[in-house]
Every structure is written in structure tokens, then in C-alpha cells.
Length: 291
Image 1 (cartoon, rainbow, N blue to C red):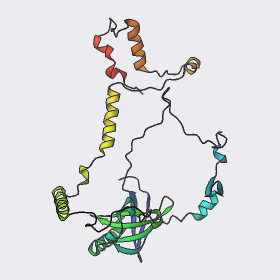
Image 2: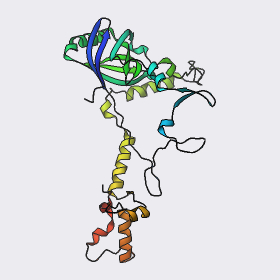
Image 3: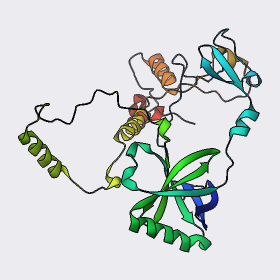
Image 4: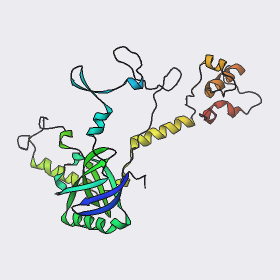
């Protein structure tokens, strides 16, 4: 299990069920760094005054809300502390609703709720009642200093807490240009609908999440591995002035460039040095980035 976010309780009327809250999802994005293509040095982030173009010290930066164009209200740390909800570490249930009443686009982030030994009986009670009544529990909960609306959903033997987006966080779609419900007006024939239904039936299957993969990420990782194995890497080299002034420091160089220059000096056309096996002249795996 991942590291627990907090230990608290589910408050179900007068019933308190001790639980531990765990994150149920993990980001799998690849971390690409911004580089200067001239020397492949990392490009850092710097706070710049957009008016003067000068760097701004961290202690001179404040947070402001733009209530009109170029008109700001400055907020202090004390303002945020006063507005912040108290981290009660309680999943405070206030209602029960049918699960199909909550549109899918309201669901945001899942978390696992694990009972302590003292909470096992109450946990099982709530889970079974939700399952038998086919309802989910609506609750308020604080996670990482922010208050959330949440739904407790029974999934197998687990109670999953899924944070929900508030109504004002959902963009209205009533102005979207959508086709109406009059299928005849859209010239949709009964035959077309029948064929579409047959296609859906033919493609129907059970839900097996382990079958689905992030093929975009897998392709990028495979491409990165092939580039490393082919020696298509770039090593950050220090500027010549810095290397000249350094004493005793390890020199970081582009190995591929040095190999190429060495071969050119020996024969000009990729001729291998006489004392080395000819296959060593190809670059290949010998050009991998070393760290």
C-alpha cells in the first residue's frame, strides 16, 4: 500500500468507524526536462517581472486576485489561514443517493478507505448496507488542507472514497450545438439504428481494466530505450572557459563526438585504429550515456 494520507474516522450519524485514507491512483506521466538545444543544459524556471523583465526575489512575491483588468486585491498568508477549513480527518456522511444520479463527470480522484481493527465491524456494516440499498454515501472530507465533496462507493470488499467536483466547477453545456431527439428530422432510419445496435452487441465485452495500456507512454519509453542503445544521447558538456579554470573536477564530455574526431584523425573515413578490433569503431553501445 502507498503511504497513508491520514488516520481518522467515517462519521455515520452517531457511528464512528476508524479508518485510514490511502491514495488509490498514481500519475504515470514521463518527466521531460526543458533543455537548451545549443549545449543541452537544463532550462530552469525563473520568476520574472513581466513589466521590467527583471528577476523578482522570492520574498517580494505576493498573491493577488485580478477582480478587473489590471486591478488586484492582494491576499496575505493570514487571509488564507482564516479561510482554510480545519483538517478534521473525518469523512462526515450527510446523505445517501442512488449512484446513477451522480453524472460521471462529477467524479474526480479515488482514495481507499481501510478500517482499523476496531473499525472492522462498522466498516462491513456500512459497506453491506450501501450495497443492498444500491446507494452511495455523500460526505464532506478534508484532504491536504482542502475541503472536498465526496462519495463513498462499495467496490468488492473495499469502500472507495471518490472526491466529487462541485456544481460550480462543471462548465454548462446547454449552449453547445447538439443534435435533437427527433431522429426522423435527422434522417436516421430504423435500419441504421438496427445496424448500429448489432455492431454494439458484436463488440460488447466484460470490463477487464488490466487489458488496457497506455500505448502512447509505452511507445515513448521503447523509443527512448532504442535511442540509448543506439548511442543517440546527449551529455551535458561544461563550457570551455569553465573547464579551463576547473582544477581536479571530473570532465563531462560528449563521448560520441570524441570517438568521431578520433576516427577522423586516424584515417578520415572511419578507419579503425590498428591496435583495436575493427568492430569497436562503430560507435554503437559504446556511446551510451554514462552517469
